[in-house]
Length: 312
Image (cartoon, rainbow, N blue to C red; front, side):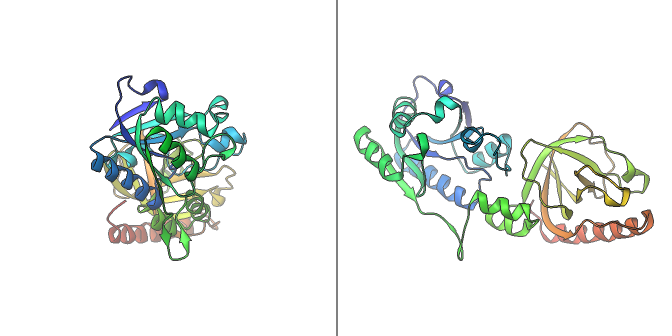
């Protein structure tokens, strides 16, 4: 998959293509179906498929300081999009100038002049242009004018719940990683760098990898989770703790993972933590001994749960 940044990253001799547009944070099951339809349409027309997305999240530019928790960092999102068979991921910097483009200006400057769209596939609630004035209907009208078709893809969900990034974020914030995984089609994952912590875990027989998550990461509610540490393509079973270490009177919220049957050094590595199931609340214990006993139970439950859920 080719990866472009900005309209200047689009090759000058670029031909026709099928485009789908959105933030696509989380690349959840609804996103997957929209992107999949764009890939399918591109195959029908014999042209490449392009996913057009934005950085930073538009809300942060429209209302500074309101950046939502992010379900997928840029690299992870790109990898997930690539797995769907997309030919090109184009990331447009969402600036104040870009925000001020009218719906008609966006269509002409990006979809017509630069991408030469043959067809555009978007969710049926898609909005674009300054103030979100553009709709699927106005996009279709511009398509008739400029020679591209438009498909407004119905929103998808399960039962009476529609899959959306907002819904997944709410599940993650509540610690309901099981429901988040149902909407995502995979386990929720946060990425970051392993940094040095207090090294108490090593002293009690449970050395942990302390993760410094990417900015704005959607971190699950405080608690203990069964999950996996992703080290490249390797997925390692891990018991994950999120909280302030109340047994040791901690006051800094941390994300730590005890990787089962593993004694290698992870400091400085970029890793991911995938959440399979929430085990329990974060508790304050009356000393190290009861804490260690509980950790032993958490590890065994993690081993069983991860074994029953082979994909991360």
